[in-house]
Length: 338
Image (cartoon, rainbow, N blue to C red):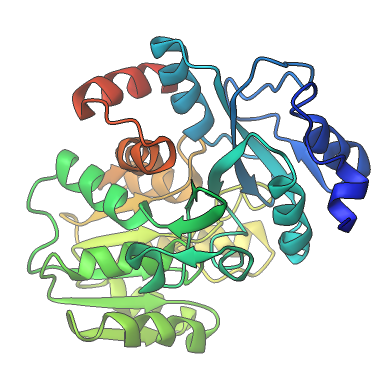
């Protein structure tokens, strides 16, 4: 008998969520507080499927609320839930989830997107090509990673600003797990070039090398941010600047730890951005500082809620296998986000 069967009980039919309860009580994971409609009744014996979205800190993710609204609409005994854990313990967490008989997959959010692949049984082409996972689907006893982040971001962006990518210089701020799929999908839309700005240039270079067959791509240090955005048509923040605990910092400046210095540098860099440029952010917080500064300067902005919504319908179908009309799903999900 394996360690997780012993520790978590194997998820009997009478108590399907017993392994999850044990994981929470042991401190391995916790239920996130900020996402809407994210409560989980650990005593629910009628639940047939549980989808878990792993994140490394609490933030107002929308996937659980959107999925749970669809489940309620169709009367399905399923539940989605954001859970917080340490990405360094991803192997233990996934093993614990597997021991729950009704665990049916879910997703990887902040901190887990580029860490979870080795703990899965395989990757779909959408995730394999970029090495990043945001959706985990159960296929029998196998758990397979997919990625809908980039597809969702581009769909949401072009829905709000049609034709805003082709022929434009795009500057990507940050080189974390979400930067990969977003850069890849944007590169398919025939931009003039894509420049990835990151504190660690080698990490940005990895992304640039990946998308180089699709478009001109470069990686630069944060010190070059002001120069690079001076002729940009689209700037996309994929970093955590603007999210807790960095909510007082903007992605337009290198992280100094000093709020006043950050603001001064941000304003200096932002002043070089062409007035027609669009500033996008993947953060789900209400008007993060990067977007607030851009909007105050008269720029068009694009919030992370768009990506959240437009990746949700394809992700939902991958997760559940339920083929519901996109228009119906989007209507239910949009209402769930408020």
